[in-house]
Length: 328
Ligand code: ADP
Ligand code: MG
Image (cartoon, rainbow, N blue to C red; front, top):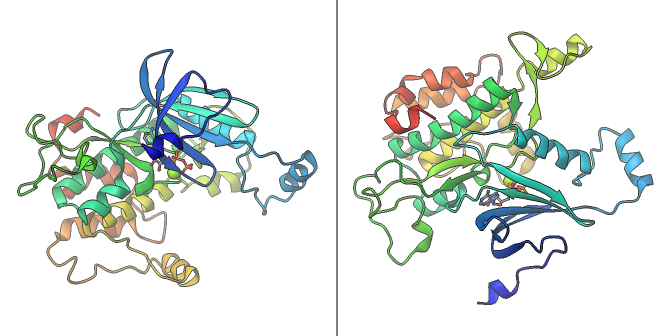
């Protein structure tokens, strides 16, 4: 197989046999790999270190507006430090972290089902029931982050929402699996427990951040001497994940995002004004309950936007919470 021959070799990663490429970002490559030490199949996220000279680095640090678009040691360590604290069925687990001269390596729990993004492309859109099952799992991960860990993810999007092929819910009526298509494995698995959708796992804590506890107005973890403007600044930081959750839910239901424009400038203006519609005919058959829920997420004023607890208490969410997901 040609692709297999093209897998790179990373000095320092000899313990792992790379099996296939799972995804790539601007500064990272993710591989499915066999860990010869533990005999586990895992995901290895390989992040290239940038050999910028110290002088350049100094300059970039001073000029905070020009944030370096490189993976600096501090950034990757933050991602690792945050991930180490997390243990939740709907969050990709970090098993190990190590580095070589040129790369950082994150050994992660493998989500073999791939990205939610690819599922949307494949199915065009999800039924309300299927969308609910997916979004509830994402919401449980967010509740854990926000309420238990004081972490804001800040990069919730379909590319960072992954699947693990454990059948949980039956496939929707009328769903016919494409037998030829291996990609369908992991979302609906006819034959295993009557078919089901894989468990959802959120990944990519590269932009995540530990924030202030809104109730007690204390920093999570440490006691500091932080000024009120910083506390105020962070008051609504969790709400960025709620906005993103609304965008994901909208996209799940119709297959296109709430805000879109060819021009970045026009798109930015639409987002800034919170200018979206439930476009006909795509939204015609969709319940007013879920439209109501989305409207409470895609609202410009963060103080009015639903919190994760308000989201989980909404009638549309409550309408179909399956037993298996309640414990999560
Ligand atoms: P980046 O910061 O470059 O976006 P991600 O952590 O999002 O890095 O990983 C990039 C892509 O690699 C993801 O969108 C996904 O397709 C794939 N990926 C990441 N982690 C895993 C994992 N644990 N299991 C399977 N695929 C993964
Ligand atoms: Mg990503």
